[in-house]
Length: 222
Image 1: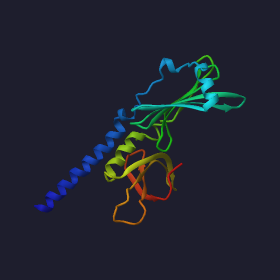
Image 2: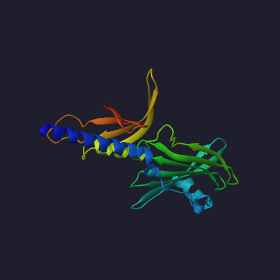
Image 3: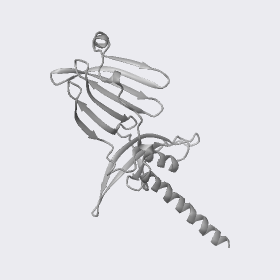
Image 4: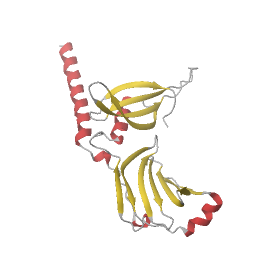
């Protein structure tokens, strides 16, 4: 009777795990960024920043939720202006570049722990027309999105371990190419242990959400 009970329990655990993973693939709502380009961000007044940037090189502001910075940098024969707004809770950055006249040049969304580009990168001409869109989401290759890969890793790691980066990659074998997420975590050092704390990489199958392997790493990505 005990053996039957154990088998039934294991069966339901496996079913629950499979359904949970399948839900990631079917339900994509977790992957939405819920971040938009506002009307005020489509064009900025360069003059109000130019003199300060010439003196300091950049402008940085911070509050409880966001850190924002404005920089001026050379590209080709002209200077462009970069605006970066980082959400401190989600670690997602909204990066916007502007032409010298203050019109938007491009917008990108970046998960800044590991600098993984997200969603769509959009480029504009001087009149504000869209000229190019780059799909960084790539849902056909990575149906498990970065948020879901982070959530899966949260369920695998110990509570005291911390995630410090996520990147995308592919594993090539003789059979096929497998697209994967690599989620990097730090293990805090135990007070009674003299050796250094460890860092690990969880390699998550981006098609199924299953853990492929956990490997020790010696250096932070990037």
